[in-house]
Length: 362
Ligand SMILES: *Cc1c(COP(=O)(O)O)cnc(C)c1O
Image (tube, rainbow, N blue to C red; front, side, top):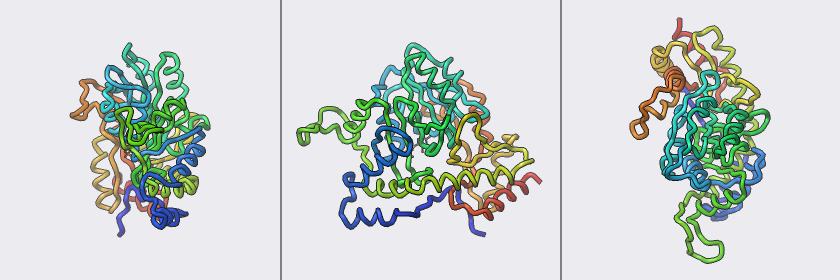
């Protein structure tokens, strides 16, 4: 039986034509018409005024932090239960990540825990919309406004994710997206930065391109980076954007099928909670008994089904270890499995996966 991967991008539509256009025109580097088309198309898609493309979702976060002026001496509140890039970029900016716990229901940043973590040094909150579910944005936006904190949204896993019908990434002072190969919209590697303030946007564009002067060639007026996306990546991204709705529709249907097929088992789905649109970047399950998580994954691997465990909490990692206990994040992390979640997953494959999970519990 063919094995089923966790993810495989859907590369249909205009992708081949657009990439070939790059090749035949010779515009394969970080200049070319697809860059601005993808940036404006993406901004329009999420409902932002503008967006600037970058090489990946990690440098997107670093650029956003630096452009907002976050650096040494600043504390940034971040959920420990996230992909490590959220935390590493805070450290790379010279700031200090302050880890907070998550909510059992949504798996997202706990706004009350964030409130308790505020000190005189707190500069910002980084809200990570994990696995396609949004954070509780009313509470988080309110908290930031009340305490004069910057809000950065890590939307790497949240294309198509809405809070009260508003796309995530449009709440914060800055927001970032990732277009890695397994993300809902992919460019292979790639990322995007959004910022509310046009001055911050301009700083992002300046910093991502070596800080070069607009008026004087090879004159660099600040220490900066090469974080640019290529025209080829943008060509793929534009074609992906054109089929994004169909990808998202299919992912929601897949989550629905899993939910139906897995009822009655000692586990729960990562269901949407509140006034949200869950985009199901990943279809996740949380097993009731954490000691059964790894044996279940092994059982599925034996059936040719690839899965992923949830992220380990960052406060347990060697390079950013904090001597604290975040019981909800730790428990969620110990129980979570991401099932195959790609848009072209067939009904037969979903049945095969669900049946393999059921057989483990029999
Ligand atoms: C994927 C991801 C990133 C980093 O994106 P890359 O494009 O892989 O650099 C950052 N944060 C989260 C939550 C992610 O899932």
